[in-house]
Amino acid sequence: MRKLLVTGGAGFIGANFVYYWLREHLEDKVVVLDALTYAGNLPSLDGLKDNPNFSFVEGSIADEVLVEELLIDNDIDTIVNFAAESHVDRSISDPDIFIETNIVGTHNILKVARQVWIENKATAKPNHRFHHVSTDEVYGELADDEDAFTEDHVYAPNSPYSASKASSDHLVRAYHHTFGLNVTTTNCSNNYGPYQYPEKLIPLFLSNILRNKPLPVYGSGKNIRDWLYVDDHARGIDVILNKGKVGEIYNIGGNNEWTNIDIIMLLCKEMDRLFAENPELHKQYPDAAPANGKKSADLIMYVEDRAGHDWRYAIDATKLETELGFKPQDTFETGIIKTIQWYIDNQDWWEPLLLDK
Image 1 (cartoon, helix red, strand yellow):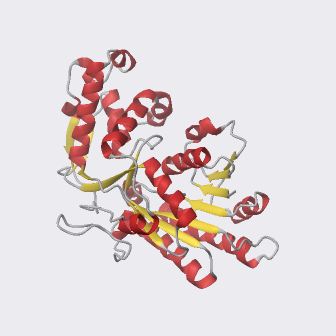
Image 2 (tube, rainbow, N blue to C red):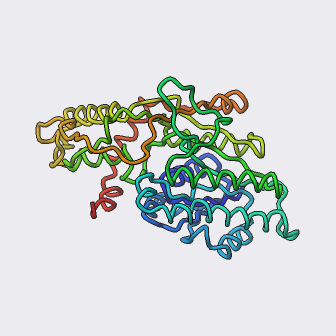
Image 3 (cartoon, rainbow, N blue to C red):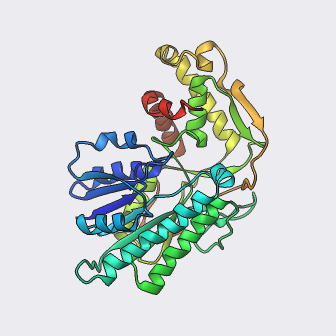
C-alpha cells in the first residue's frame, strides 16, 4: 500500500491523476496539497469528498513546515509533483511566479523529502519515491523534418515557463545524484481531457463555441503539437512508479501530432455534428453558433502570433514502451470525443471560471 502526497492535485492533470489512482489502487491513501491559484480548482475534486482514502490540504509547496508535517503526519512514502505554473502566455507577461513556484517550490519539496526520508532516522523510508512531472517544452522546438524528442535530447527551453521547468528537472536529477533521493521524472506531450482550465486550447475553443465567442488562432495556426489523453498520462506515471528505474527520465507521448488549426477545425466539425444530432443542446446552449444555424468555424479569427511560440513538439516514447511495456490506451479519436462530451455535460464546472472573461 502506498501513501501519496500529490502536489498540484487540484489542477487539470493532478486531479485526473488522483481520480485514476484511487480508482485503480483501492487500498492506497492520497493527500492532495494545492495552493488553489487560478488553475487549481477545488470543485474538480468534488467527486472524492466521500472517499475515506482521500484528503485535501490547501497550501503552498513553498511552505517548508507544512510539507514536512504532511510527510510525517501521513506517513507519506511517495510524492507526485504536479505543482507548477504552466501557461506560456502568463510566463511571458509575469515570469516571476514561474520562478517561485516551478524552481523554488520544487526545490523546497526536494529539500524536505531529503530531510524526512533520508536524514531523519526516525522517519527514514529507504523505499521512498519522488516523481516529478515535467513537459516536452524543456527540449525546445523541432523543425517539420526533425525526429521527435527522446530522453537524450539536449534541453533548449524557449519561454520562461519551459526554462523554469527545465531548471526544476535539473534540481530533481541533482538531488538523486548528490543526496541519493529516489527520483523519477516524466516529460509529457500536450494533455487534453476533463477538468482542464479553460484558457488552454481545447477547453477554450469548446467553451467559446458554446458561448458564441471568437476562436483566436495564433499566427497561421500551423504550429504542431503531440496530444495525449490525460488518463493515459496517469497510467504512464503508474507504470513508472511501479516498474521504472530510479534516477531515470521517461517520455510519455501520444504519438499523435496535429497542427493547431486542424485540431480547431475538428472541434468545430464535431460540435456542429453534435448540435445537428441533438436538439436538446440548442436549449442548453442557445447562444452557440450551431444552435443558430451557423458553422462553428465561422468564429475563427487569426491573431498576431505570441512571442517565443515554438513551432513543433513531438515526443518519442519508445523507451517507456520497450522498457516498461506502456502504450496509450486512448486514440485521439476516442479521447477527443470523450473530452468534448465532458465539457458539454459539465457547464457548471467551467462556466464560473469564465465569468471574468
